[in-house]
Length: 131
Image (cartoon, rainbow, N blue to C red; front, side):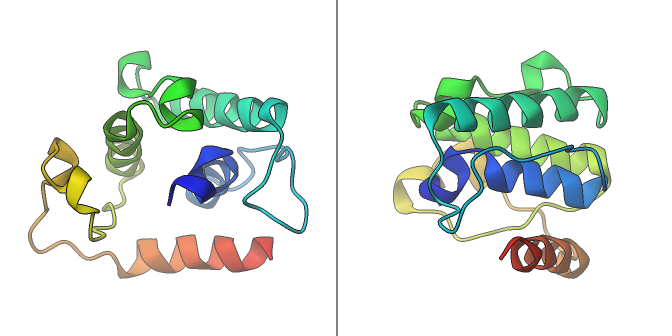
């Protein structure tokens, strides 16, 4: 998970699926989507943070700090931001199995009875479209 999130590309793709056209361009896209320069990763994360506030109305307190993602300092903050984005977008967050070291955090809270089929399909379609 970390490799694909770290450069901000998939986060930008996610918000663009939720609000088409909100991300004007992605930085550092090449044949290996898991690689981007530090400058590209910073630009992608900045775009994601800006879109979260401007398009989805998240507060600065809902966002993670760039180093929480790029240096993996606080993965819980990253996942809390994604959950908040899901709430604000009207979509239900996916409920993936978490690695044991993350399962005890507040991101482990599960929503009973939520339907994630449409959300999962949108994210999957965005992933396939990037390839």
